[in-house]
Image (cartoon, rainbow, N blue to C red; front, side, top):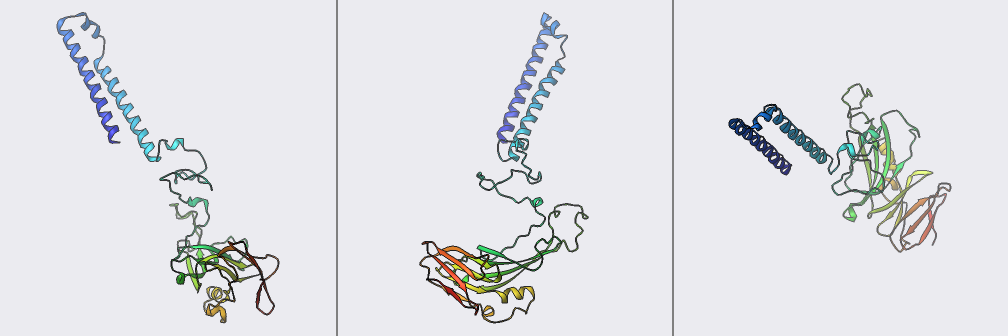
Amino acid sequence: RAVHESTMKAKRSAQAAEVRSREEATAEATAGGSSLAEELEFEDEFEEEDVVDGAGEEAAEMEEAELEAAAAGGGGSSSADMPDDGLNPSIGGRFYRAGDAIEEGEELRVDASAYDMLHRARLEWPCLSFAVVPDALGEDRAAFPHTAYFVAGTQAEARGQNRLLCLKMSAMHRTKHDDESDPESDDEEGADEDALLECQTIAHPGCVNRLKLMPQAPHVCATWCEDTSVRLWDLSHQLGNLHAPGKGGGGASARGEPLKAFGGHGDEGYALDWSPVASGALASADCAGKIHAWRGSAGGGWAVDA
């Protein structure tokens, strides 16, 4: 911008010098009674000066506006050159699609207008795997505020810091019109309240590579651990306390003990899933390509094939 301003000043100085030169030539011709004075008698030197200066100033303003537009756009294009990809104009930039290249200096930002409800939860440690717990609140719930239950497994810095997290998010109100200044844009009762995050934990012997909830009994959770072991957990105590504090019951679930721990895999793994049709049927596979099938028994035990 400093270089641009210096260039404009130099142009204006040159234009002013040209005008002064013409004025001096006119004065000399008039004093000498030359024919040049008679020709210049019909010229409006002030109008000529105005035309020169006006054109220079207009060009300078146009160049300055172009530079400002380029700077605002973060590159050589103004906002008018950006593609019309449906992005909220108040956000600016371009619409990002999975797989698009991200240029140096670009930053991904959320367009909140795309969501009826958008809440963020921050935990102590990142979680590589999580699952939504099915509940009895309705599959196609529409009335706000919303409540939802989750289970997540941490990737903590130290092995002994890892946990299975049973989470309940409640008081999740509509957020789509939060940026609007009209107080009547959302008359939902309690819409200004913050969402509430509650947590119950179970110690896990290492980072959780993957977790899966049994479809037929969502309180039963299988986890792949970084120490090459696979475990089954009963989360009924933790999820019950989130639903109704103090009503979670006891047993192994309350003590945080696994229902089953299997160390027959020879390598770490990530592949883990329950059968959607056969209750208690689980498959686990490690990075060495070894697969084990699990089967639950009527008495509550678990058998794993060799």
